[in-house]
Length: 313
Image (cartoon, rainbow, N blue to C red; front, top):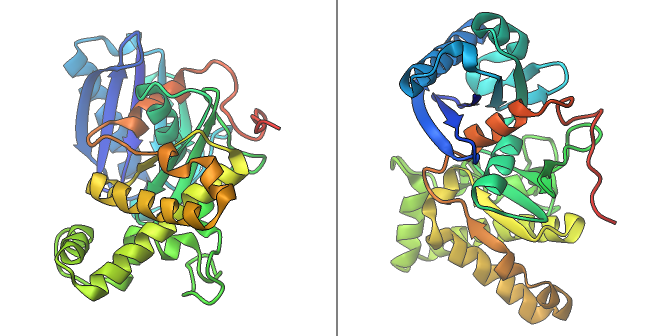
């Protein structure tokens, strides 16, 4: 019995996978704030999803956890998960002691990449481009996560594309994250609307010139991330996820438009067929929780510094 937990800033999605890797049972519980509360809410999620699945806890063979922050899969620790109030937490050990099953951790974006790869039936090399509060990507090569020697593979959000741009939280200027993230939208389009990105796109559709400029900036930033992933790892598919993916085809069309325009100016870029490589993560797909379950079931050492998948030559 394979369980996966996706621990977010406000909620935990917990899933039980069926034999084919699909979601058999799913529950959602609130996330606690602080180390002890995070562990307690993760334990609650395990008990609730098992109860809803009507399966004894003793039949749980593995639990995988996707969580934001700096994750050490081998040590089972998460650090600097700011939105959870966690500085340093041995989550794998603490949760395993409470539920009596082995637990493995992975960064939530990387887990989501593996989950999207499985749920969407992707092959070869693919990436999940997460456009959330920040920007990052998870890369999967032939069904396995590529983390890199230090676990930093996919940090495309901190690649500068505008040396004269605004300063990023990482200390550099003009990073992709300053253009195509939820925080970037909040900076460029100040709003009290519950969904500022939707308000932005609505205003752009209505012809507002400021909104059109900001929408173009967001789309260009996302397109830049797609281009980086294609040129560095030659990903065959880029799946856009994260909070901004809720815009769906409205965002996808703008990103493809930018990529197509770049191709008109560059025969080299045109030859790569970048617009055809991009798709959206379907709404309400529990990619991170499913990916966490897949990470948790692996019998070998968790993918990390000791188990690096090299990109194809």
